Length: 303
Image 1 (cartoon, helix red, strand yellow):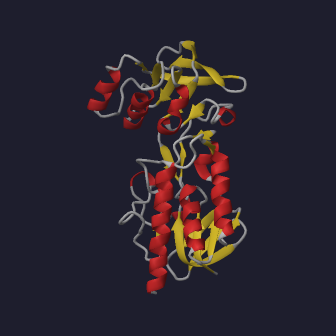
Image 2 (cartoon, rainbow, N blue to C red; image 1 turned 60 degrees about the vertical axis):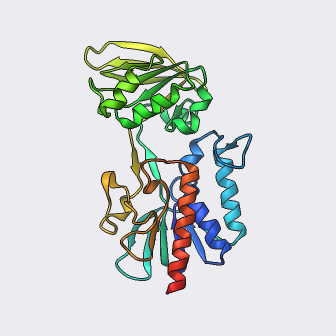
């Protein structure tokens, strides 16, 4: 039995753990299958305040975890299989145990959709990225690919064009799904070139990606393209599968919070990318983690 259980250990969950433990609340963090979340796949983080020389994503997560532990937060390396929010205390079932809590903060984040090609995991963070705002600066005067055809892909391509020498927009269909105004802006940018009916067939490189093999899915013609990096913009999948029939999920199975961090169930709060499909930044996730645990503390105090 715990006062507050935090599900997830990215910036949102860890910030919540730091604030909650420092305020003398009993905190248990269930880390999940990828402790630290997506930030651990980023090599250098240069836009997180306080690190003027940048910081390794794994190192940043470790510092946050140690800070939470310093104030008394506990951690377990398990994944949540299911929850029961229909009764109090709430029940959380992991792979090997069952826990109870007065308050639950869901900070499970979201995972990026990928092409699921061979060697993809090996090149993740070594040429393959999912956030232009996070990693675009590293590709100044270089050639990059953006995969996708929606609004996110257009926005990523436009942002990268500020730094890169050339941006190749790769889309498997013959028409973009992005809004017309975004399409016009991107297609009129001289640094951006669109490739329709085209897919990446293979990643090429040794220690990091330096080229890709492309295929035109209309005529099956293959080609090789020399590049320095790839940015996936084909969507994200929120980690909400364990919440089936327990919380109302919104578009694309994201949690749609009430007043930023509340859910329809009193005592259940949400923070970070699991409810934020727009910004998806470490700093915004941390901010939501702070708000969620302060709201949780107020809820407990009022009880």
